[in-house]
Image (cartoon, rainbow, N blue to C red; front, side):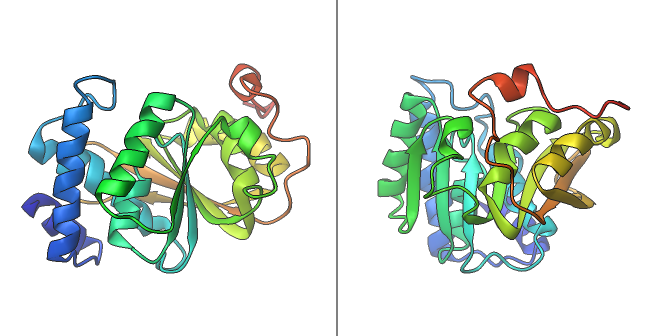
Length: 241
């Protein structure tokens, strides 16, 4: 895990031997389970360190303060990215991994036990439904999501989970200005406010990566998110876009 260790140091993270061992076991389990399900198309040892693990940790660049002792929910967690790398690196945070596919939920539960990750909950369900449950609605300091949906849809799926003062951090690649412009209406309706676009400037990444940080400044209206599938089919688009 030398590439991850070096890359993480550029983010201000000094990963311990124990943490690097956890990342190594996580990689091995991901590889083994990937033989029977579609967890990832990236399987090379060095590529996983950079394109999955370091990429996941890069979200801290857009956090207003270090994530210690905060609550984080990872929407559409899939193989556990970015939630599990964040939990390994910041053991004191509370993490919820939300995933709708049962096989992937089984993998996440297995990894949780294998890595002995305490104070981490795996929830099976759709964001459109779970966001209406009292235990999760407007309950999290940080909402993260990686490669789940276009931004107008993603905003409706994520901001309802944020407490007032919390933030959504969305990971995107390439130029995002047009996608962001299309999301202005969704951000406003969901009670958000764009804080910043943060370029991820690490030599390890050969492509353009950007973090979109949106703060929650007012409550989300009770009817949002709409029922499953509707945010994707009928996103709340800005008419000017």
